[in-house]
Image (cartoon, rainbow, N blue to C red):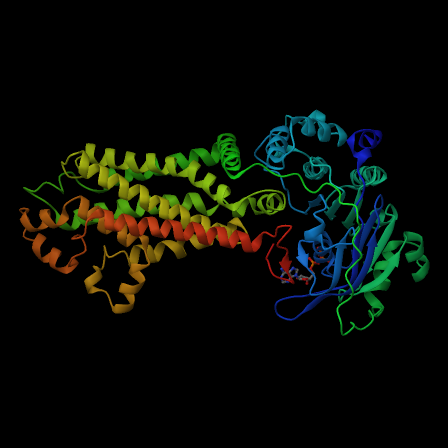
Amino acid sequence: MSARVTETGQKAAEGARIHAAGAGLRLRGGRDVLRGVTLEAPPGRITAIAGGSGAGKTLLLETLAGLRRPSSGLVGHDGADPAEAAVPFGFVPQEDILHRGLGLRQSLRYAARLRGADGEDVDRVLRELGLWGCAGQSVGSLSGGERKRAGIAVELLTRPRALFLDEPTSGLDPATGARLMDLLGRLAASGVTVVLTTHSPADLARCDRLLFLAPDGSPAREGTPGEVLGHYGAADFTEVYTAVAEAPAIRPAPEPADPPAPLPARPARRPGPRPGPGALAQWLLLTRRGGELLRRDRLSAAIMVGSPLMIVAMFALLFRPGVFDPARPVPSSTAMVLFWIAFGAFFFGLAYGLLQICAELAVVRRERLTALRLGPYLAAKVTLLLPVLAIADALLLVVLRAGDRLPDAGAGVYGSLFATSALASAAGLALGLLVSAAVSDPGQAALALPLLCFPQVLFSGAFVPVPLMAAAGQWIGAAMTNRWAFEALGSAAGLEELWTHGASPLGPPLLASYGDSFAHAPWSRWLILAGFTVLFLSAAGWMLHRRCPTRSRPLTGGTGRR
Ligand SMILES: Nc1ncnc2c1ncn2[C@@H]1O[C@H](COP(=O)(O)OP(=O)(O)OP(=O)(O)O)[C@@H](O)[C@H]1O
């Protein structure tokens, strides 16, 4: 494996010079997590950032990569601002940056196309990283060490000039960790600048340069492994960890009143990152990848398809037939049938959307650094999921009509009922995507589900008609998509007519309590539902934009939850 890395294309790599001068990072609350860090990571060498837990290693790595803008001091790539230098670099976070549900080769192919690389690049990195033998396996079935190498393989697709890795050997047994460090050593020998964080004393001994961070985020000691050991008079790096944790940090020189002078830019301009595919190509690619993920994740696909079917069956059993029959209508049941159609459509949209982004945020963050555009990304989610939802909505209407739980009406009425359901699903899906983009993990998304559903039930205007709500309730109801869907369904199904002229004496008083809820043309409610959908999708895009840095827009200070 060793020779392969150097023998193949990486030989041509000319490493970037990564530099920090007095870099500091202040979190939003005013806490300084990095203080006056000065560091030179030379090309063709491995530079390690070490220090106790919470010392700021990951934040420093992100700052050095240009993903975070330092609050003070400078970071340079080849002597220039990282955004301007546009040095092609790879960043391997601790989390997996490949979908576990896809095959390794397949996953790398999608990653390659998004990065403007091709199938030959995929074969090259599979060979270079010794992954050829498991290329057909799903990423989720790879061992810890293979998955780490797969994460590096993604980054090598575009032949980076610098590679940043956050704890690449964590969770690996010593022998596998040592092999991974050998691999990185060979990569560095081929010219690439390698910067990594680690907790492992064994890793540190294999690096060319070390920076130990003190617990307060200031530099404790920088130098070669021998120099650092010598400075502390330590026999091994475990002793250095103890000494750094106990000794007062070497305070960086006070910051000058004027910001440090910009680093001298190198005159020669090397090739920047490869351009990714355009918006349309990305949308197609991401839709295909999403479809593939769904196809391979049989259990999730079965739950996605099975749950609406179950609800359809339950609805058919819950209501008795003929409630819409003008000769013997049951007005309260007609309102309930329509409410549950609206809520079912919303609920499935919401449930489908909720796990979509948070479960793959690490992948999105990484791909955003290459070429991923948020518009095509969100559009691909909608393209994939909305048809499934629309089929479930249509099925619900067909089954309810076949069982005589909906009015005996023509295609126009059913077209309206379907359009309303589909729009209610779209709004639910968009809200689910928004929440999924805002939370940190699937657990939080699951907790949000009741929080999002209760107001949609209570303030829908079905159980407590809008005219009978308190003023505040009416305002809240206006923000609930379910209210507008319910009103559109009531209007399309002709509830006013049925309740006024149907044979039930309960119809007119019920209509009086609902006021003009069903008096408006359905299309006026469709516009509102479409407006909510666009609003939620835009907000989801904005949320992702904030959370996922790009080369030209690094996070500022300590913003941006991981
Ligand atoms: N986005 C953020 N917002 C607020 N605080 C943060 C953020 N990111 C990190 N921190 C805090 O900054 C400090 C340094 O975090 P960092 O992840 O860099 O530490 P670390 O040295 O990599 O730790 P470990 O070795 O345990 O991974 C920690 O106290 C952490 O809680």
